[in-house]
Amino acid sequence: MKNFHLYSDEAVLLQTNSARCTSLESGSTDELILTNRRIIHRWSIPKLFSKNIEHVDEYPLDRIKIVDGKVQAQYWRNAASENDQELRLFLRDQELFFIFWSDKPRDARNEIFQWMDAISMQLTGVPADKPADSSTAKAIPGVAWLTDTIKGTVDTVRETWTGQSVKQPVPVVRKPINKQCKGCHAPLSGIPGQLVVCKYCDTKQTL
Image 1 (cartoon, rainbow, N blue to C red):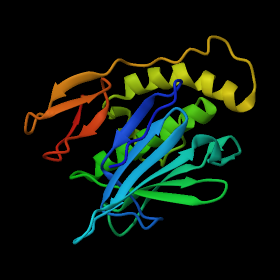
Image 2: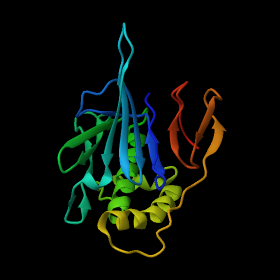
Image 3: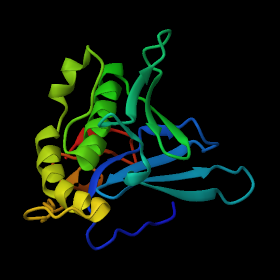
Image 4: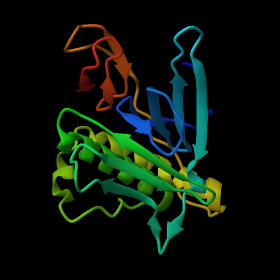
């Protein structure tokens, strides 16, 4: 996969390999990354007899629509299939749909809610509106560290995008840690509480 570089005032909030963009002609290999400034979508199209075609698409968070104070990052589920669940992002100039999957549909739903909350917190400082049956989202692993991180960065982002002065615009950045995969014991790295997928055995786990 092509590399991407973070800005000096940028921190990774969420990262997943369990999502695929359905609104673009992306390939079978996708990685979705949320920072306090943008959404990064890394993907490739596998080629049988040639090198894979690799892409890195970036979407600044301030391109996402806000209607009546509500960030247009929404949950969608196919009524005919519990496994067909999407995070839908409505930008000023396009729409992005990312389908999330998991062995347990509830885990995929909770992960989408986690992304919705993180995006909404960055743009408005409040969690996202979710469907009425979303009470299980309270049990999302890592929600505490995510809330702390977002609270520390939201003022900085708001001042950058709106020009409004805020107090103590100091982002809170958790130090990365190294662990072993609980499935195959391969090395893993990331932020405490981050949901990751092992690239060797595809085991989903929280650091």
